[in-house]
Image (cartoon, rainbow, N blue to C red; front, side, top):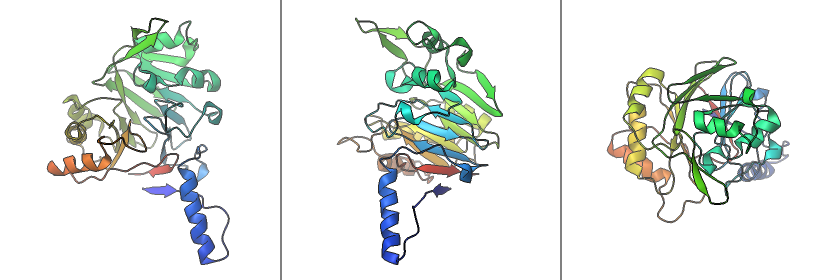
Length: 287
């Protein structure tokens, strides 16, 4: 995997080269990234913008957003930064999963692939997303769009939506995860907020993901996270890239860290390294 960076104008001395490089590294953690350029054409790129918000760009330039929670406490992106989006995948009805899905869809014309009840809510009077932009499904559903195949799978998680002055929870349908297979065959499994489930072994054997974006919030048991990763390696020699989500940039004291999960994987004799993602950095993914 190669991480694409722009280090600015060429420096005239070795000292200034080092300074420019350091400045670029510092800036990338706080500035929203533009849509990956043609320099990444032909490969899949991944960017993280805090919490569980990711942007995936396909080999043919199609842009997919996962859980676009633009107002998350570590966000480096706003609605103004988004103009080119083809597909949004909200995993469930929780506010930090759905995020600003309807606002982005209305601005960009992007399609939404969501659990049926959540999709119905997004089309309703509260959010008013046009019906032609919403594809509703459930675990086992498939969306094929512009050479990309997205498969919806179950997630062991809740999906209630707070609505109305009383704060009563509306049912958002079953929580979901997604398998995304791009035009070149590269496949990413986004777990949503799922705990480990034996079904992950079945999906891994069937879809053989190359990368996994797994749930790792501060309260998540590292053994459960590691089991989710272990199961996704079942009959699947392709799994080489691991990315956490739902984590803060600064993990709360006592919260689960990448190091905790890596240690738990070690007890299972799994040595696949976890990538500690940097906000707004462009990661280039290849087989």
